[in-house]
Length: 254
Length: 374
Ligand SMILES: Nc1ncnc2c1ncn2[C@@H]1O[C@H](COP(=O)(O)OP(=O)(O)O)[C@@H](O)[C@H]1O
Ligand SMILES: [Mg+2]
Picture 1 (spheres, chains in turn brown, yellow):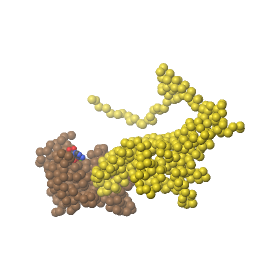
Picture 2 (picture 1 turned 45 degrees about the vertical axis):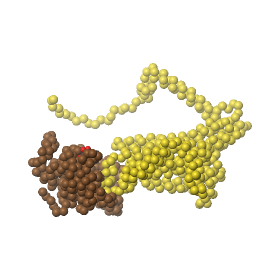
Picture 3 (picture 1 turned 90 degrees about the horizontal axis):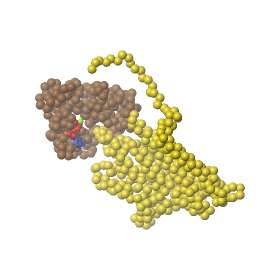
Picture 4 (picture 1 turned 60 degrees about the horizontal axis):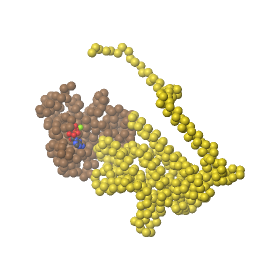
């Protein structure tokens, strides 16, 4: 395993979460080092989204700790509002359905949070946003509205928007699942470039090519539990857990 | 199945012309069978008769003013006059429009009406749908108040017991809506949130109370009961009390419409705002409300139309609005018996305002539907 630092950037211990009576996350432990790239996979409904949504506190949890570099160390997700905001400033998130703000242009989408939350001036925020839009190769669309862009372009804007907050950790929740097949690659390329720049990333995805190319570790979840953690080559070529094998058998069948 | 390979590529062609000639429309929609022919002819005949009678009464036989031998009132009462007496409108126009406002100063309520109409015209411009619109409203409404009340800028003071007619109707609906709007947003947000249950309960209480009690009752309570609760030396004029009742009433209905808009925003928008570390207030102001309000603008316009017409009910508590002014005009012995003409005229004013608003609302719904489709 390629742990790149002694103290992890993100440390999840004994995480448990219920939706009403349903036990959605069960005793989840995961340490993520700075610069590490994690791919999370598993069957639908296994708790992957719930796990990464707990990390930036979009979802509350009942037991355990999720500590981001000292932040959020109080037990049971009872971080105060200020602390939650600080965590969210440091963690960027990209959603399956982009969730761009449709009433704002691409540029406005990108500068809103830096201006409000980081208190950047408009000039600083705009300059930074244009730089990042250029990096996701979409600089010429800055003044368009999200509805005028293709799915792949929208998702790249969403990535740029998250990066505008200068996050230390990026979360991706199936960023290519809602895309037409011909647009998947442009988004994956953007994510690969981000990984090569050293960003710490946790990606929920079933794109095996991407996982093999950039992941340090693959985390396999089923029924709210982490069942296997392994480097991508080991995981895809010789899965150990019985349900990992079943799962890979199913997604490789076609 | 055997293999297929396209041998040629088809170029795009223009769509076939689907327009119909007048002849085709008539045959296909109006005269397509015995029943349809009968129906069309019958309705055309009825329409023609009604139109002729109306034209006769309203124009051909109508009296518009004095003749060589008779003054206007006498002309209307003459034996051979069977048409409408529009002369009464000309004679009572100022009373109907401006009530008992000092005659020489009536340019002020006139200008106030123009300002409020201009405000509507500005508010329906989609390019102006941004927070700055609230500022425009404040400026216009303050200007209207100054014009009506006077007392500063060298304008002679005029108490609101002397206001009357169209400006009062416009003031009740415009100020009522303008004040109700921020209250409604607060009520809708309070009802939607989960963090402060007391606040939520209070909001539900206010909304459900105002919606469950008829407006007339709220008006009587405001004009009779409100003074009992206020300190004796607080002079709150009747117009202001009625305005407060309207505001409360309008806010409750608006709040429910706005809440519908809030619920129509996908959860992903709230999540994205949170994930970007926006606070509750920031995500509401910048992300959620701009979208939610845009969705419910047709609903808001509909409430405003209802609101505008509902102001006529203040007759019962003795506020001098357009409707009361019409009643007063007919009370003049000189013109007794010509109520139909006066009420038709007042109705026409209501119609012009409400119909323009409803046309605007229809156009808007079409535009919004097109935006969503694209
Ligand atoms: N808001 C919610 N309320 C109730 N149950 C939920 C909610 N969100 C997710 N779940 C349930 O929790 C389980 C895990 O969901 P999720 O994390 O979305 O799975 P995945 O992302 O792996 O497909 C599923 O069984 C799902 O039905
Ligand atoms: Mg999911």
